[in-house]
Every structure is written in C-alpha cells, then in structure tokens.
Amino acid sequence: MGSASKQSKPAAGKPGRSGGRADQAADRKARIAELRAAEARRDRRNKIVAISVATVLIGGMVAAGGWIALDAKQKQDDKKAAAAAAEKARQDAANVPIDGVQTFDKLSRNHVTTPVTYAQTPPVGGDHNPAWLTCMGNVYDKPVKNENAVHSLEHGAVWVTYNAKATPDDIKTLAAKVSTTPYSLMSPYPEEQGTITLNAWGTQLSVDSATDPRVEQFFTKYVQGPQTQEPGASCSNGTMQ
Image (cartoon, rainbow, N blue to C red; front, side):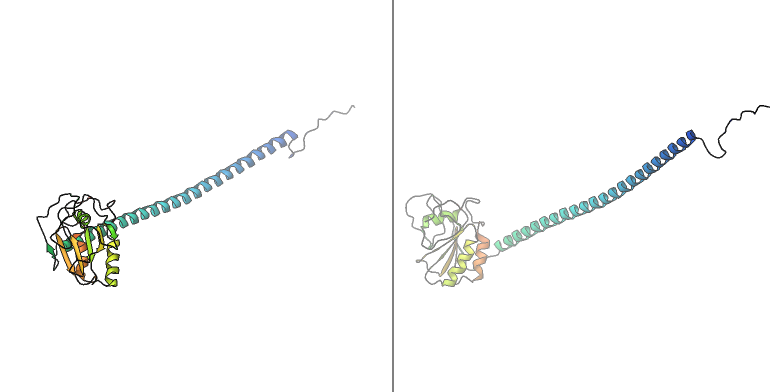
C-alpha cells in the first residue's frame, strides 16, 4: 500500500510569522501612543504651572504697581496739603499787624534818570530809575543807589539796610535770610538812624537786632506782599551796582 501524504500545520499556540509582525507593530503603536499621551500630560502640567506662576507674578506686579501709584498719589497729596498749609500760614501772618511798622501813601511812581530827593531814609517809594536793582536774594556789601532800589520795592522786594551799629552777627544773620529769599536784597546804609531797617514799598520798620522776631514777620508779610505795585514783575536781570 502506498503511504498517504500529510500536510504540515503550525503548532498549536504558536502564531505564524505574519501574525508576529502584526502584534509587534501594534505594540509599537500602543507604546508610541502611550509616550505621546504622557508627553501631552507633561505639556499640560507644564502649561498649568507656567500659567500659575505667571498669574502669581502678574498679580504681584499689579499689586506692587498699585501700591506704588497709591504711594505716589499720597506723596503728591501730602505735598499739596503742606503747600496749602504754608500758604494759609503766610496769609494768616500777613493779616497780623506788626508793631512799629510805618506806612506811607500817595507815593509817585515816575521813571526818571536824575537823582531823587526822598522823604524817608532809606526811601520806600517815589520816582525812581527805569532800571531796578537785581533783588533775587542779592546781598550787596556797598551802598546802592536809592533810585534803583526803590524800583525793586515797586516790584515787591524787601530791602534790608543797616548802619555801623549792626554787629557782625547781625549782618551774617540778615545775609543768610536774604540770600535764601527771592524778591529781597540787602545793603549797608550809613546815613540811616536805625541799626537795621526793613523797607518795602510804602512800608518801613526799624529794629535793633537781626534776632528781633519782627524781622521774620516783615519778610513773611511784605515779600511780594499786598503793598506790591507791580505783582509778578521781575527782580532778575536788573542793575548790579
């Protein structure tokens, strides 16, 4: 009897070669998908962290900016309040009479180029030279011309004069005050009777010492005060004799 031919079959439980490749490809796809999912999760976490940090930083900057703005506004408000208080104090002081002050009215205001004979010594008003004496806190160590100084008084300046009775300390104290006060000037005046004389337009006060509290009162009231004939007129760029 002839032997029958037999067909070979793959062993049970052992997939063929083509099946193995498919499984491997599927595994690779699954692994890649898993890696991509993990990467996506990391990206989301990083974005969340970055957004959270940025939110905190922006919030901090907004808060800091708000505080800076509030602080700047507070400082500006404080400065305005201080200026308003100082102005009110000046106005209050200007309304308080100063003992010993003499006032003179009906003073002429013509510009002349010739010497003028004045009724007061030092003069406090009247005809005067067209050029004013520079009076932005200027301290002159020699006598100045009346006609130029009177023009400065017309612009609202206070003119401090003194004679040989004034002590070195008096002169030093007065010079310190004048040099820090725009619309004021100072010069020796040997002919005056008082030791120290404070002069404004139509207004005069004589004191014996630079420490007399009326000196400060006079400056407060009469530097660009109500007696000023030409408010806002310049005290700069005048003659410097």
